[in-house]
Image (cartoon, rainbow, N blue to C red; front, side, top):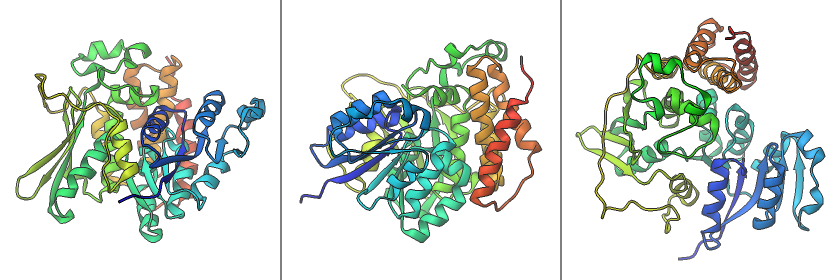
Length: 387
């Protein structure tokens, strides 16, 4: 049985997830088509992508980068859009079937929100959307009929494993964590971590911000919060286990004691393709596991003392409200200061906790209030003690 080609808009096509998505589309034999591509400031790469995939739209959200770009290179028939509102225009376009939300950080919220408002299928790689506004987004999706399919490898694994039972039969989920490059570091060693050290992930090839989040395990903290809202779970139904090989991407335990796991190579093309083709499965472009070779799968409990971000994530999952936006914004700003040499590695999480504890908590904020707190938290981190 043949299906019409799915028209895919990629918000953040020049980033790691966006580039992997285009590889999946290129290998789809025409069953997936890139109808819109967007970048913030990487316009040279955006133009090269446009030349290869011939989308209907390209969008640049950075006005300065757009003003200096030679748009004459665009092929005839490709429409150029500029400014932050361009992402919302693309997300709402009737011609778009699937929106890949791949913009890193809270900057991706507006485009994702527009896609949910329009009732689209959203391949969600922007975990910050659920961290910042999980209750608002899920409520809106229920109203508009939008379908959110996770792209994060851990949440994709949970989503896939949950297909084996009914929702009320799920006892808990277990998110796996590689442990990052500092899994066995002492407190003294962690104090001396450099930016270069933090960017050397042992198993995944990701963008710099998420790689540093993996090193602090803040990435796993954010994933706990995302899972809380994405799967409508209680925080006590979410556990974390360290799995250095990054082969088991997460597990679901059912009430009868059965535990289902999703396995695969550490390659983001696998969950991306699943999100784009769901509920169907098609021949994969990701490298499959090789069971002719000996392999081992290790699991160990996480160290909450050395990696306090995990407890912070559980706390925010329990409290909800404005806690998520403050934690996420503070972390983005703290990571930026660490990369600039203004904070030590071991100061990232304490700065986030300090900002979180001093904010005026609201259990039921509006989207506008969340955006104000996002700005406030970033400014507070800039005032945090320098080296």
